[in-house]
Image (tube, rainbow, N blue to C red; front, side):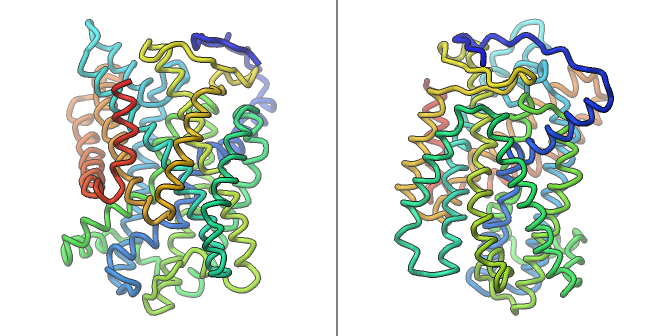
Amino acid sequence: MALTNAGIEAEPVEQSSHPEIEQHSTKVLMLGALGVVYGDIGTSPIYAFREALVASSGGEIAERGDILGVLSLIIWSLTIIVTIKYIMFVLRADNRGEGGVLSLMALARGSFPTRSAIILAIGIVGASLFFGDAVITPAISVLSAVEGMNVVTPTFQPYVVPLTLVILAILFSVQRFGTGGVALIFGPITAVWFLAIGLSGLNHIIADPEILWAVSPHYIVAFLINSPDVAFVTIGAIFLAVTGAEALYADLGHFGRKPIVLAWLAIVFPCLLLNYAGQGAFVLAKNGHVGHPFFEMNEGWTLIPMVVLATAATVIASQAVISGAFSLTRQAVQLNMLPRLEILHTSERQSGQIYMPRVNVLLALAVMLLVVGFGESSKLASAYGISVTGNMLVTTVLLFVVMTRIWKWRLWVAVAMTALFGFIDIGFFASNIVKVFEGGWASLAVAFTIVLA
């Protein structure tokens, strides 16, 4: 384990060219990426579909059009935002193997003869918003899973917050073992998680295959036209399904592009689609009664194991933004935006795998304060979207600069792609910014503090 106080890059490790070794390494990194990179977006089904249905129906009974419209929005959001924007394009914009909004900012800024102050300011804002996300994600993820015990027994409610704090304390205490050490434990558990939620959803899709019609985007159009006011509010909840996409890029230095892409296309994306569609089929079968579909569709003996697995998975979900926060802080130190901090290199093979003790302690304190202050995941949901949507919007702006000045794309192609991503990002951001007084101020307060620092 190497120690540096200035964030100096470790010497590059000589990679073996033997195809069998390289293939084995890719599989190991894929498994690690499941546990570290995809924990956040992988646990969104616990609360995203339910929150969106409640927002669209205004209560506990959703109509067929609402169910299909919400599901279609989730499917196409995952496709356009995660698969196309991040997997196909953003992950290609690495800065010497590192990802994250500050790396993207450094690339964009370096393409100008004189360093652009505007690009620097945009990058700082994006990084600050990511830290706001890094504080809220562990709080809402663990809280939402522990609340699943209320489905088993309502008498568990008084123990939700205390148990959440204990779990968070354990999570932050194991960070010192490094991303690689954490991934050895988290990877297999997350693999089981994705398999479980995929099979859970598939079971209900087979029972009611009509739900597959939600793949058609015309349900989105109908949903937006029929009730534009309700749809605007619902979009803010829909965004919960893609939170974690920003962590894919921030964690690029920990695993590399290939394992992250393969894990998404082969495992994560298919299992998420199956689970969301399964929840939709379950709610349709219950005549639109929303309830808590993720847990309720696991009936009988499967309920308690799913609650336990969900609790473990949501603890792991927090790892994506914690690792991303370490990487982003190191980049800020290297760019002289922050003073020198203790940085521990935890891997001899991946120089991007690091641990920062001071950042870890500050994150832990901030997360626990949020849990105590808000007390419920539904209240934290209002605070969740603003920082993430803002970060994604900043990423789109900086990506346009990289497309035109570094990748040398034709202007009309870059404008077309940026317009598509920007339109969606702005829609999500606008629908979330109205939640400032409902709890959204929390993430903005964290971001504002970082900017001032």
